[in-house]
Structure formats: C-alpha cells, structure tokens
Length: 609
Image (cartoon, rainbow, N blue to C red; front, side, top):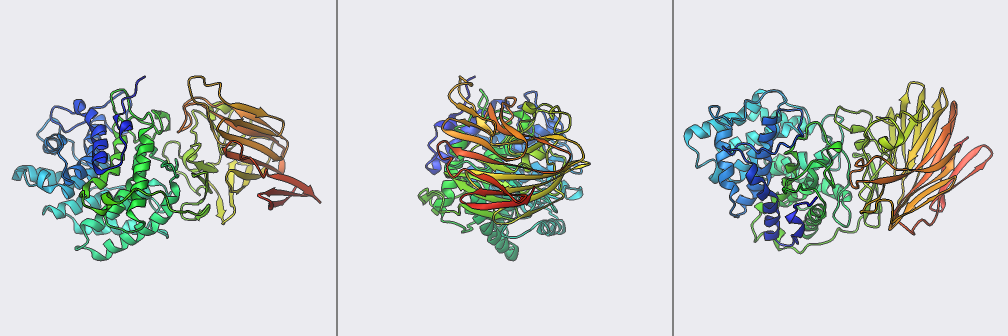
C-alpha cells in the first residue's frame, strides 16, 4: 500500500519548513470537514468509548493545536475560514452540527483546551469578528466546564485553559474554579520538576505534553495577572527539562513508554512550550534540535494512511496498542508540537543553529519516574521499578510494568494471555501454572526499591506465588534475578528485547544462535539471553505480528525455567544493542551455598541458594 506522507520529504530546517510540515499534515483533512465545518468526519470503522459526534468535534479541535500558532505567527491558511465557520456552528444549539452540552467527565472538556488556545493566540480572528450573539454562544459553551465534575488528573488544566481564555477575551469566567484546579494540580507535584498525573499516579508523557505544557502557557499569558505562579511554573519546567532530555535518543526518537503513545510527536511538544514561554533550560539550539530531530524521525515512519490521514498506532498503523479513548481523530493531539510557529521569524529560537544533545550521564536515576536510564550507542534504555497500583486503561501493564523500555527495541503488547507467541512477553517475566497455556505477569508491585545501581520489586503472580525481582541495569547487558516462592511447580519465561524482523523477506537477513544456555538473534542489531542460574533452557519466541510498537514482526530471545515448589532463584543476563559488542559477558559462580553474579568486571549480586 502506498503511504501518502508528504512531510517525509520535508528537510525541517527553517521556520518555513516547519510551517510547511504542518500544512502537509493538515491539507489531506480538507475533504473530510462537514458541511458546517464544525466536525471532522474521519470515521473509518474505528471508534472510542464516546459518541462518534464527539470524536468529530475532537478532530475539529485538535487541528487547532497547529492552526492557532500558525495564524498567530503570521502565516496565511485556508483553515482560518474553516475553523471560524466551525466555531460558530459548533457552539450554536440551533445548528445541526452543534457539539452538544458538556456533562460530567465529558470528552468535550478535553477539546475545550485547544479552542481556548485559539482564543488566546488569535482573538482578533476568532473572537473580535463574532457578533454579540455568536460571542455569547461560544463563551457560554466553554463556560459549561465550570459546572461539571472533571477527572482529577491533567484534565483539571482544561478548566484552567478555558477560564484563562475567557478572562483574556473579556467574557465571564470562574476565578474560584480556576484557583481550585491549580491548587489540586499542585498536589501532584513531586520534585525535580516531576508531576504525577493525579494523586499517586504514573509519571509519563502527561507530565510533559499536558501538565507542564498548560502551565507554561499559563506562565506566558498570566505573567502579569499571576506573577508568582508564572515564575514557579517556568522554574519547575526548567528543572523538568534537565530530566526529560534523557528520554530522547541522539537520533531524535523518544522513549516508547506509557499510555497515549498514538499521539506520537506530541512527545516533543514540551520543548516548544518551553521556548514559547521563554523558559531558559538549555540553549535554544539544543531545544530546537530535539524538536526537529523528533519530527524528522516520525515523518520517516509509515504513520499516515493512503489518504494522508494520521493513523492509530505508533511507528506504523496499529490499533491493537491503543486506548479506549482513542478515536480516529485522536492522533492530531500531536499537533501540539507546532507551538513554536507562534514565535516570530525574528525570535532567537528561529535564528539559533540546531544543536545536538549536550553530554548526558551514561547512567541517570529518576526516582520520581521510577527509572534508571542508561544511554548506549546514542539510544535510551529505561529500567523501571513499575508502580504499586494499576488502572483501567488499555494495556496498562505492558505500558508501565516491563523491566526495561528502549528507543531501540520498543516494547510489545499482548494479543491475548494464552500461548507464548500471542503474549509477546518481551522484557518481562511470564509465569504459567498450566504448562505454558496461560500466563501471568507483574501487574503491579507490593513494594519496590530503587537505588543508583539496582531496582528491586516484590510482587504476586497469584495467591501462593510471590516473586522478588532484582534488576541490575546496564547497557548493552543487564541482569535479572527472580527469587520465587510458589506452592506448586510452575514454568517461568523471562523475555529479552524484541528483535526486529523487517523487510520483504521476513525470515532472512538475520542469524539465530541457540544453545542450551543462550539464545541470540543478530543482524546489525543483537538481542540475546544467557542463563546464569536455574533449571532452564534458552529459546527464541516468534510473537504474533503487530504486537511490537516499533516493528511489525519480531523475535524474542527467552529464558525458560522450571520452577519447583518452594523457594528458588532463577537468573539470566540480557543483551540488547549493536551486534559485535557482546564483550564482558556476565557470569555466575556458586560457593558455600551462595550464588554470586558478576557483570562489568565486578560482583553485582550475592544470594543464598
């Protein structure tokens, strides 16, 4: 199938290139606008938990994340007329394309934020020209958000965006509600610039492209109204920038981790907001480089349909990895990355020369995000402890509870919990009590500990089977030790990195090396497992296609262990990186009933066997 991706030809060097890239993404949408321009009718048989009409509003609004900065930056666009018409009709209860009233926990609340940005950046185009009746309808429709319950997470800042916009255009707004929402989000602050997405919730991309993004907008537009908060938000964003930069590879890709990954290049949106708010965390050339390289990386991928429409998926069209709140228009959240277009051509951001990443630590602990991040060959490997809870979002377990995530190998999501290939158990331990028919993995921890050189997790597979997992980070090698207490004999499958099997000849172009104690698969890259302790054997698992976020087809070197009833230890070393660099191979010894494991020329683990 021919993929229509005009942006892949864009060099993305200049401000005009940046604007052209946005136009190349937007142009294919024109035929899909409704007659009244208030809806984007992209329905393709895929839907979210909310009504299709709301998904069509979502399409209209998410385009505004790009259109608003484009127009504010002085560029001309046909979308000005389209969006003005849609704004009038969508907020008119008498019009057939009315967006509907906002209710409690309503998806419409999400879409209010982009409409608010339009009013903040372009009031002369989308507020001033309206009649008094049109102004009343628009402001009243937005104000509804203040009268309803809202999810206690990044959603609270949608309310802030609305009231900030209403205040700036001189309409009725709710200062008390805005203050309450800001105070609630303050309760999510951890340290070093990190916020969790709700009380005790995950730290993921919502920290960057939601919480910090909106707070940076607040600091820009409310600098005079609320100087104290504005200054605080910019300072915290600068702290966070020094942490978040570790999530980006030298080549431009960012760490595949957490939910909402179908928003794709929203990964770099924080950096544009940082520049827009004049927050000085790094030289502008460094920030510019992160954004442009990330966009180039994305535009090289087959993420558009034959019609030029962004698809659901990550590095390719793949609805299996999505959430139930992802509709056919959801990926356009990624247009948040185009906020720098609001900066004039004379701004230092556009005058700065694109720079590479600064020198970063090879190993860097992020306690707030529960990561030890290793950099190897310019790629990112994030070893994680996981969390002491889970939630209802789709594939929450594989998106947060693997042992390691990487820009080089991505991660996989299961198609079903039965049979090893369908589970695609990369970078996780899958336990089976029915001889390999069904599997249980770590869903959450009872408790966990993270230090500069290891991660320890205590978790249950089911009643009667408890596991203490110790991860010794490293790149390209790392060690996993599992101390298992079980009432019955079980099987354990510890999966390595998912190796890409790409190209027209899927079963060629790589080398598969297997022995009793090791399994490696190699081409330019190499993924492998080496058994260190336990009654087991190495094997290569070929998962069901379209389970990995980066690659259609993969192979997973896996350590298979028989675990007897009682208490026992299993251990293996895992390799992931360039082929030919598998030196300093880890090994284990036993002495006086003690298991000792060595890696990198030193002892890294000692335990009684």
